[in-house]
Length: 405
Image (cartoon, rainbow, N blue to C red; front, side, top):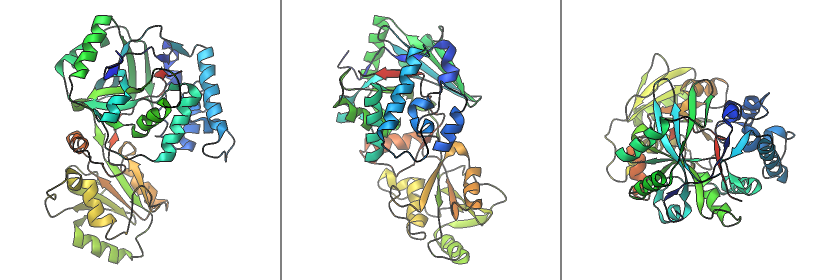
């Protein structure tokens, strides 16, 4: 199985009776204060492993050895107390996320780093070296990858059928996060069934990283430095037609020296601008919401999307080209401290709150980028602008990990 795109592995997973106590949001979704509050009075929350700074004195420096020592100590305690248990043999896992209005079912597997390096597992984002190094050090300290990448693949009827069959059995564990999203893990066993599913994925043209570019790069970095199952990374792959992307919104600290009147005039010259009666969550492409000085506006691009590169036709690019760069003077979105981003899971109310409390002068809500556009960008070998896609729901950390040493 070593040459497979996706391979089974013997997971380290949450014990059935401990899953609710363990499961946590991905490490990079919560602020430090939010993570500390979420883990309060929850000694087995995986946040003690993924965000060890919550248990260290305030002011502990980023990258301090105590961070990785603390993560490893918390991880070891969970294993010693039976909160996390080792599976005895390699297997796949079926993973389902369910909310009130939707469900999506994917495959947990150890994906090939060689495939990632040759482009069969496609990326669409740039990464920041400090974040990659942090997660690589985290992997090395634990001897395990604990944060799965979220992948998507083009729908395949046979893959769907095999996963649905697995989900008809007894689950290994189930957890509900935030009282809203149920995360359930089932075993996918049997040498013939595993071989058939692995072969089916080998026939799929490509997998796409939806969420977790830094984790992929960290797994690649760590693979060169530690022993263990070489060249694999922890992933969950879902069919593209079940994945959901929400808008990824922008807030800007100031108006680039413009008065409110001058700014609104410039906006009106670039876009159609109309006052709105309440919060604006765009419901079609080429429209935007804007919150300024306690009031919402609805913006719309007059011209059709530009022909040419798919990246340039995206709403996030159009907002940059029409407003953020020429009017507000925002530079590189990865580096400019004047811009920040609000994930769609927090809702457009979070934009107004940021402006009202003085964290920003203006906020913009965006229509979500489509899954088809994401795959088209990746197929073209292009890179999306930073913070373009917010996948919801997020995978849970702690349900299953890939031991690397």
